[in-house]
Image 1 (cartoon, one colour):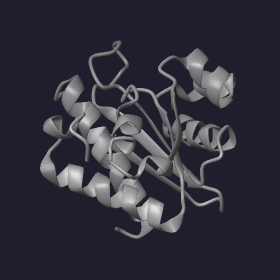
Image 2 (image 1 turned 90 degrees about the horizontal axis):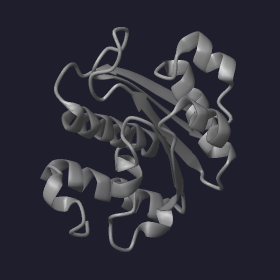
Image 3 (image 1 turned 90 degrees about the vertical axis):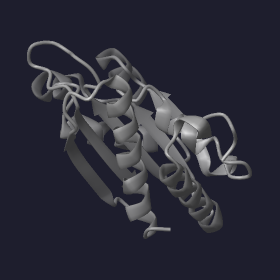
Image 4 (image 1 turned 30 degrees about the vertical axis):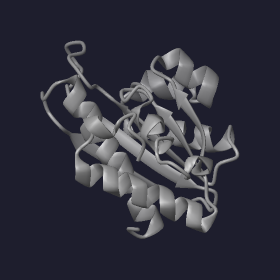
Length: 170
């Protein structure tokens, strides 16, 4: 991994990210991301391994509901009915990222990294992964009140785990 983020990441996570990217490269696959609470962190680490940049196709940072609707075609009524932080919206984000990119796999993250409103559970995060064959995987996490940075890092690790599962644990 390049020196850009490696000083900030736990060594084991850095090794897992490198293995995922090498597996994507070895298989000729590309990935796109759709992120909200991680603010582009997943995309950033997926572009940080020397010689593996071609495995990353593009990333969407859609922090607001309007961005999810405009950039990823998430239905407005879905956000209204389920909220932007829901399993259904995470799936719609992943589907939108796959549809709007040339990638083989799309992974999405939406959640509450830090204190939100009275109905926002801090540390609640949803992830989804979809591939061109229609395979879908989704996860829900309750990381708790551990601080924005820690929640974002935990969500990153969960996204890496989804990719590992997709690739058969490289």
